[in-house]
Image 1: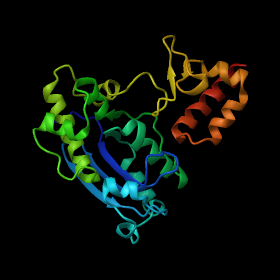
Image 2: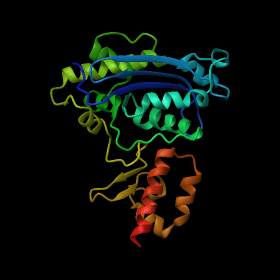
Image 3: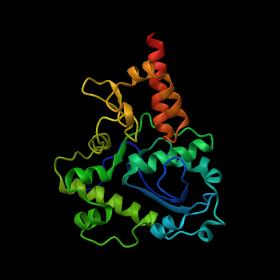
Length: 256
């Protein structure tokens, strides 16, 4: 089933130096930009992360320091990449918790605000887990009837994610072929930030979803323990999480 789009939808995947959203860097980025008229724009490029690639990361994606030593840094391509993503909805596999927050961190280091407001985010992994509980390799085998050659290669994973979503639409009649509906369905919980550190409770109140204050309202914690705000803003939390917390703090300040 082909996607029904109102604006471009970008499927993308990252290969990185590790799994720390705040500290790690991109070494390869691939995207397929799908337009409402069905046109597709595809690109994959390697990026010099500016830091050594750990052996553990190379063991996963097979990209070494030598492979990227002559490639541009993220800062050198940031503006052109931002223009490609501007005005688009976003799709990926485990992208809401990892790829999108890490990409936002990379843009932020370049002084570019990658605004998530107004965008729809489809996480194909979440749809898959709700329906079948598997990995991308298994999802590709299950939905597409093929083995995923070159897993952990950014372009191979990106193509597979795009194909899996189309097959999911064919398989599940309850899935609506609409980006907003798919984004809602692929969201886990009622999170306010992509990493789900701050979510809404049953009364639509923002609460913390981790650590010692898990289950407590953000408003209550900020009032009783103002230092917790400073700790989070200075800690290794994704920029998107910090932006949400900062917005809530400003809102509560206005209510006084």
